[in-house]
Image (cartoon, rainbow, N blue to C red; front, side, top):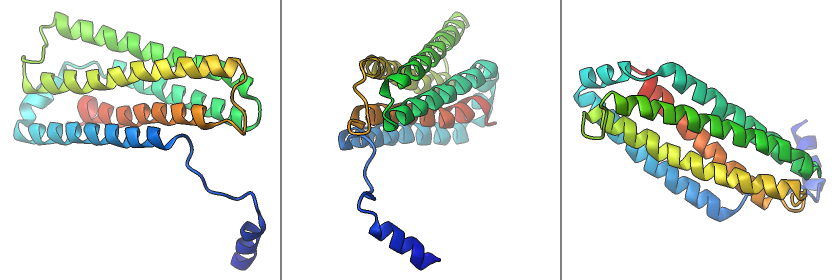
Length: 199
């Protein structure tokens, strides 16, 4: 059975593993993940030094808002995957509504996060109010800026998809944009439980 599978793959001239998207975007993604990793490690060390302060700071966060933002980012990633699959199937224009939906999800994240920031600032929270507040604002705002950049990318992908620019022979752009958005989603899936939930 194993021999047959090996023979089938060897006999297929079109079976060629490739990197989805552009190499440059993957280098950028790895650099960004490294930056977030350093941030997360610093947060963990600071929390270990003063767990009571961090637990008190977490009590003031809106976990429902964080959970909602987790849902909308996951939904956005699903929509992006559908758009990529449409392009792979030669139906690039059909991916445009999915990209628009992903863009809408990104917009919902931004609105909710801005509401959180507004409530935090009204409560007197700032970068200097406590170590936890400094990490919360720094980490979430750094991610927030990545969401905004991701929305710009999604907007460009949507315009290109509407014009039918993506097909099985031209996937580099949409795959690169999708990879970036999935990175944004992945970071939030670590950030949300780390900052909002874990006690």
